[in-house]
Image 1 (cartoon, one colour):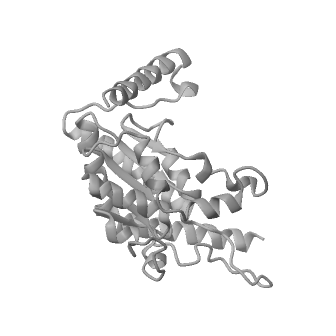
Image 2: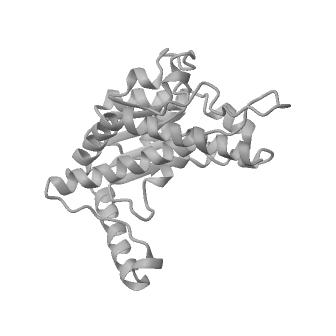
Length: 255
C-alpha cells in the first residue's frame, strides 16, 4: 500500500505547488479585499456547502486566525455525514439545489455592502452558492470565489441565472483540482479515490487569512489574532481570545 500512499501525497504536493505558483496573485487580491473590509470595521464572510463548509469554518475562530473573518455555516449544509436520518445526505442533496435558500441565509446575517464574501465551491454551479454570489453582487459586496475551473468550466450551471461562481466573482482562486476531484486510480476499482479539493481549499483559506493579517500590519493596523492556550499559557491566551470575541461582538453589534 505504500505506493498508493506515495501517489496520493505526490499528487497533493504537486497540486499545492501549482496553487502556490499560479494563484498567489489571486490570493493576494482576495486578502486585499478582506483587509479593506476588516480595516473599516466590517467583516469578511466565508461560506460553502457540503465539504466547502470546512475551509469556511477554518477562517475563525481557531489558532492563527484573526477577528473580522466570519464563517457562515448552516447545519443543513454540513451534517450530511449522518447519511441516514436527520440532516442526512438526501436532505443535503435536495436543499443545496433550492433557489431562494441562499438569499434567506444572507438576510439572517445583516450583510453590509463594505463586507467581503468568500465562497468555497469545487463545482461552483449549485443553487445556494449562486444565490449568495448573485445577491452579494447586487448588494455591492466584493466577492471571492475559490473553485475548480477545470470542473466548473465544463459543467452547466444548476441555477436559473445560468451563471457559475467563476463568472460572478470579482476574484477567482482556482484550486486546479480535476473534474472528478478524486483522481487516484487503483487496479480493480472502477472509480478513483483520494479526493484533494478539501485539503487545497483549507490551505487556500489559511493563506488568505495570513495574507490579510500581513496586509493589515503593512497598513499600520494590528489585527486581533487568536492564540493557542496550550502553548501561550492558558490564562493569558484566554484573556486575549476573550478580547478577540469582544471585538467580534462590537462589529456585530454595530449592525
